[in-house]
Image (cartoon, rainbow, N blue to C red; front, side, top):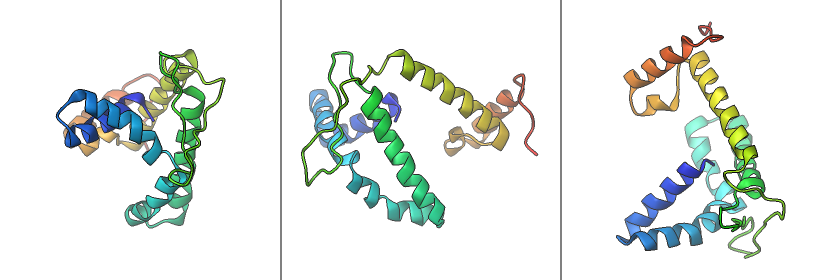
Amino acid sequence: MNIITHALAGWCIGRAVSEQPRDAVALFAALHHKLGHNIFFCLALLPLVWLFCRRPAMLVWWVAVFHFHLFCDVIGAMGSDGYQWPIYYLYPFSDYGLVWSGQWQINAWPNLVFTVFLLIVFIYQSARTSFSPIGLLSASADQAFVETQRKRPGMTESP
């Protein structure tokens, strides 16, 4: 998951619990990876995925994307201070934290290359499908964004 999304989720949840910024950061660091990065969290969200999609293939897709997220965290989420975010895959039944000795820092070139790749895919998909996540907030802003992307060289109208 994008570091900005991680930080926003942790901050908003932490601020709901405490007015002290230090408490919000501590809560995020202590609980986020334990509660949200384990197989039981993945399985707990399956009914929600089913509620929104009603397609068995989406359940499989959710599990795959969730595990891809964990994989990305294991290989490339080291902090600039050298701290490795462990994945507590079997929490609460085990406190074993999965880390990889070759984990690169969050701002290392592989993460930057992957981010640029995803931005290109995001722009292409938005232009091709006439929809982006901006549409969740504003239909007119989404339309303006999509039309701008369609005007880029190499972009074509969707069929």
